[in-house]
Image 1: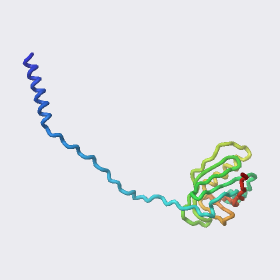
Image 2 (image 1 turned 90 degrees about the vertical axis):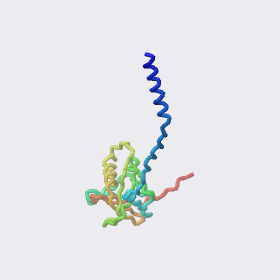
Image 3 (image 1 turned 45 degrees about the vertical axis):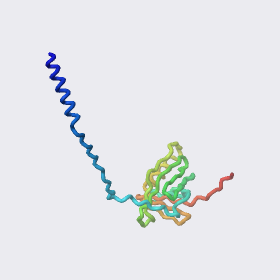
Image 4 (image 1 turned 60 degrees about the vertical axis):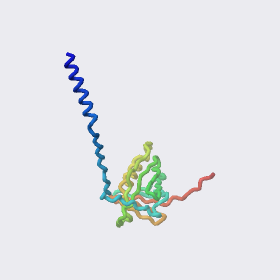
Length: 173
């Protein structure tokens, strides 16, 4: 038994000596990823024309392809910032979204889209259907035209939203 133990001890010692005599291999460097530019150009963000920016009050809605005119009985507003962010009030709820200029020109004006529309969720029974119709038209806008005092947004269906530039009332200090 002692002989087996001695042989085993000698083998372990020999293995340790052999392992210590080998030269360590240098680590293989990791492959460096090469970054190639994306072949898809970033979408160009077009500025919102100054004639569209500002605060507007809805004066009429042309629904059913613009043939039936609806005059809102309460204040509906739209404010467009120069960066395209828009906010407004439907007479019941506040809303927001983004206006993007497409760069195209249509028979109805400058090409644009309005996306990402969200609104608060207060329910106002007498205003609900008009509010829903207004936001549905706004979400489908494809063109806009402004005279500086009037803004007309046209949806793909032909429905229109006609605004007048809102009078700015100074806030007392």
